[in-house]
Length: 493
Length: 95
Image 1: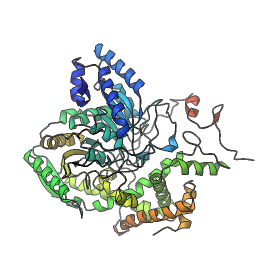
Image 2: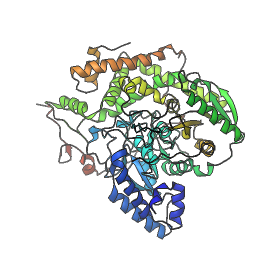
Image 3: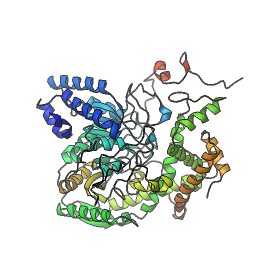
Image 4: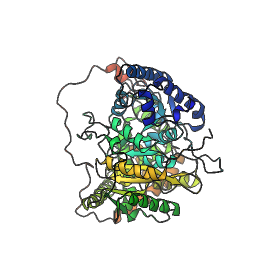
């Protein structure tokens, strides 16, 4: 039974309920796979073997007792951004050295209450700031995908790079992730996996290390659309501990997988046809359009005129919120402390040593745009532009559009240590050009693998929905998946 | 707008991040690249537009005004780099 890690969550769920396989066996298969692969892929920053085995044992007991939850015995990887009680929670940053919270995040608590097993904590860009997983204190994650005929190491995208890589390499059945500007959808697209960022307010942010609170949302990365629906159902909830958690019942997302899309009106926004966009991305987009047409959807050309301003507005709003959220890391209450001659010196030295370059850069930008004399010109202007970006979507939806189809990323995975990206922070930021609008407007968005580029690397399409209409995204996503097929990397590790 | 090295030092001070001379030079270039990129926002006509304060149209939830938690001093100081008798220890701030 060496191929247990090849099972999707839906398949594993069936085998577990029929008692063809035990939760303990399934967990053991993953732990063995992680042990062999992680020195190469670096997807996990902490493997919790003991906890995984005891959770699996408890699952087997519940299955035997007829009390299985919806995710009973399913082994998951958890992004290092989620607080897990008594377990490594460091946002892949040096400044949170040794931090083991005394509480559990709402999202992980929901998953565990439904029977999921935790395999360990997943690598990510430091504080979720990055698009390549190269800003992690624990080093970059390698994409399980390689270009045909090449052994060059590629990035898995970011910030949820460990989540995407571990799902693609079958080092967990599914993973939690978070998305502030594209951190679920971009890595999903670059690794041939499915990632959904739900509507802002759908998953509780309680116990998730805060980056930019008005943009952050949790969501799953999974092997297929059905698995993503299964995971989101468990992750989402109404939580009194998060004031932005929305009072709305969580629907049965899985029921929407495979639902007919006949008659749906799908908008294709002309502003997403960016200058210099590779022909392959354009071709993929056209292919996606024809798939949805064939499934009975109506394609409508639409305009979102403020699209080009979303990324610059994001690079004011997100750093501003980050500079405030990250003020708490001062060497007093948790994590790293570097001694100084007085308390201010201690703060400054701790933060200089504890934060990496990209995090410092964003704190500095945020501090600057919020400082006296610049607030109106930068921050207030960006928040007004954000209103206009959201209004663009509202107008299109009011005109009867049900969802939008766009590319997920401007390119396939690039090399680790790419010189172009390293020399210019803005180049790296452009990775999120198609995803960031969705965060700015608080909407749900899903990335689904749609094909391979000329070098054999996965490419994804993005579907953007109306607020709290994740179900339509699962229905449309399964049309794309059915037409495109699923993509698995060739094992080299 | 662009920043000079004095501004970089002032912002670093506000952000409580110690910077060396080499840090300042590198940060100056990087921050100016980012500020150059966001500059295009000034061309957007925002007259009469309200700044966004909440992305979802909802009234902020208020919790019940009651004690629902507490007696967690051990938990609160558990991760502190230095603590004593449930106090966080810091370098002396008052002579």
